[in-house]
Amino acid sequence: MSTAVPTRPRMVGPRRTYVIVASQFNAAFVQGLVDHAAKELNALAPNAQILLRQVPGAFEIPIVVQEFARQENIHAILALGVLIEGETSHARLVAQAVTDSLQRIALETRVPVIHGVLHVENEDQARVRCLEEEHNRGTEAARAAVQTAQLMVDLKARF
Image (tube, rainbow, N blue to C red):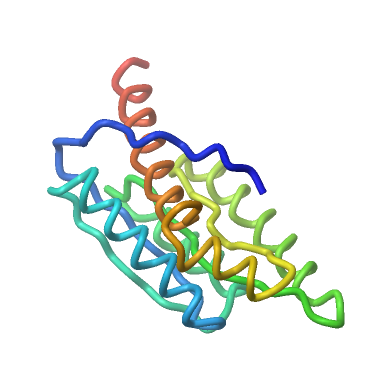
């Protein structure tokens, strides 16, 4: 596990809209990601509008992300979920499909899509990344969303 955590970006002043699309599967772990992401978004962008939409599982995340990415005035989307390895290859296949879809959506719509759908080997790994403070991927996703949204605003203003 990488211990390099993105630094906290400066606070953002203008009103921005961030969307969190979260899986309901592995609910306790995903809720930890959502709680940490929302807390960090509120700290970094106190004027932001934060929308939360929940979907049944990780596989359903991309379709909802795509719909939001096509809307006006969405500055970044955080896709949050937890896939825990089991006895079959199902989690790995879903993780790959979600990853590919989220990247495609971001590139096609030019809206930052932050990939916070974790694929872990066991519940201990999920606990460290979702419920604890030190390496919380929800916090990291929020920081990436704010930084990337600001960069996109800057690039659009420049060109």
